[in-house]
Every structure is written in C-alpha cells, then in structure tokens.
Amino acid sequence: MFIHSSQNIDRETADNFFRDIDKYPDSVYVINWKTERNFPQHTHKKGQLIYIEGGIAYIHLTHKTLVIPARHYVWIPAGMVHFVEMHRSAITRTIYFYSHDDNTNPFYTKGGIYPINTLLLQMLTYSERWNGDVRPDEPAFNFLAGIKSILPQISQKALPIALPTTENTRMHPVLNYMNANLFEPLTLTLVSSKTGFSERTLSRLFQSTLHTSFLQYFKLLKMVKAIELMLQTELSMSEIAYKLGYNSLSAFSAIFYQLTSTRPSEFAKQLK
Image (cartoon, rainbow, N blue to C red):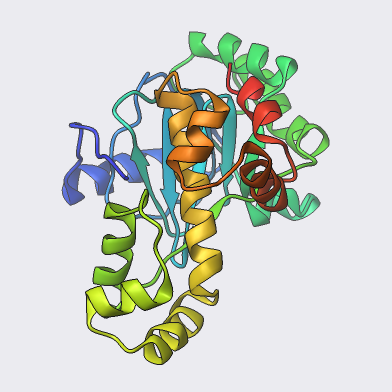
C-alpha cells in the first residue's frame, strides 16, 4: 500500500537539512518543492504544515500512521517523531513555523489532518513567492505568521483516519499479509492459519500491540484503501464498495461514515 518516491534522503543530508530548519527558532521556513522528499525518521523544533495538493501521503508516527488525502493538510507539532511517505503522484506545499507561542492554543501541540479551505489555500499559494528562512524583521513574516494564527479557527474537524502501527516484529508478517490480501474476505481464523498463530494468540497480539481488535484494524485498512481508490482510479463508489468486499454500497457507506463522520460520496467531492 505504501509506495516510496524516488527522492529518498540519507541521514547525513537529513540532519543538515533540519539543522537549517531550526537554525533561527523565531523564523518561518518555506519550502517550494512540489514533491516532498522522503526523509528518514526525524524530529524538529518547529511545527510543520504539509498541504497535499494532489495524490496521497502518509505520516508515520511512533504508534500510528496518518493518511492524508488530496486537498487536506496535516499539522505536525514541534518535537514529534515522524517520517513522511509520499505516493509518487503526491504534490505538496510545506511550511515550518516557530513554536515559541504553541502554548496559546491546544491545536498546535496535538496535530491532525484537516480539509483545506479557500482562504488557507490562497494564502499557501501566495507564500510560494518566498523560499527558505523568513525572519521576524522581514516584511513577509507577518503574512506567514498570519497563516499559523488562523489554523485553530479554520480547522475544527480533524480527519480521524489513522492506522495503528507497532514495532513488535511478530506482528509485521500479519500486517503485511493483510495488506497484500486486502481484497479477500479475511477473517481472524484465516489470517491466524496463514501466519502461524492461534486465533487466541493473534487476537491478544492485536489488542496488546495495536490497542484495537482484528476486525477494527481490518475496517480501517479497507477505508484507507477506499481513499486510495477514490484518488487513483476512476472506479465508482459502488465499484469501490464491492472491490473491498462489501455486499452493498449502503454497507460500505455506513462503515465509512462510522470512521470518518462523512459519507464517501461527500468525502470524494472534497478531493476534487
């Protein structure tokens, strides 16, 4: 499911890059790459806004993976360990913001994925005229600071699509198998037999390592794939539902709404 772009960055280059990002704590750092580089796991002292203009991206945190569809942005708080994985078709805009005022609103310290609105998109588009550090004594700084200041007000509804992850190596073959066979009618019994666990042991592993059930994880995995199919294919919503193993569009729609608080048809319109 997760496809790396060809622009993988080695650790030394990454360390130098983030040293530049954090060099001036009070500055805003603007990046005009149209595609995000694939940096190894890292952290930085500034908050990061990544807007996904097209395609799909994944933010891997310590215990979960956030799925960012097109026309959404993610806020990554300062100090959060993560790495970004871009689908090869993804187009992004990225800005790093000073963090000295992050305690003024809980938004800045919790992170999340949010749909873009017209005002923010226009401001991000306008910000393309700058590149690199913009410091407080420069005319552009107030405009860029304005982007950060409006985020809590315009970002009330976070997108709750996150796949739990684990560093437990016993679970990796299980999750790989489920991902490779996502379009099959997987059950705990089948996955247990294919990966060498008893049903009881595997059920306990899901709870202890991912803090969710097998069934709930499988539902989330299918919703992630549904979003990928919306973005990357011309399949109708009914075709996506049946491809994912649902007997009807209404059944698929009900699960999608349960996990995202949005009907799939409405969600697909946001991606256009």
